[in-house]
Length: 108
Image 1 (spheres, rainbow, N blue to C red):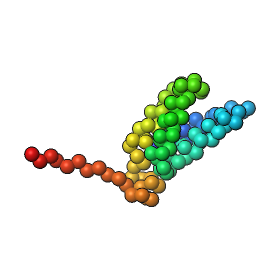
Image 2: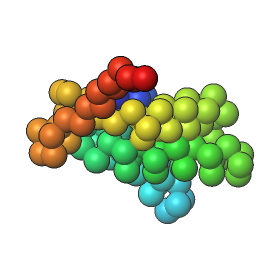
Image 3: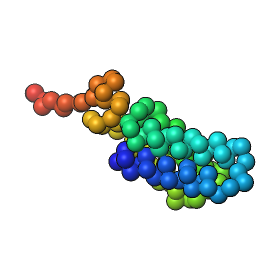
Image 4: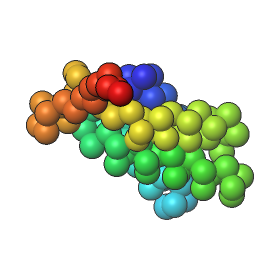
């Protein structure tokens, strides 16, 4: 899921940059989306970048800038990655260790 979100963000940001005649705000947004996509692809700061991507998607949905379905995808994937975390094969797992939750059986 991290690879799908990262590549979708990367393609979305590059497509915004290729439109030309960008304002400073739109160029900054596109640059953030490209870097967020790169960070998600390698699994660096996944909960933080996922939260920021979800927030950016919600703001874009509210303001009506850009493609509606791309913003819905950005919001959904960002929020799910922020909640799920980076996974075992990520830079975060190598730096900080992979977090696992083991659910034990209840004893009466």
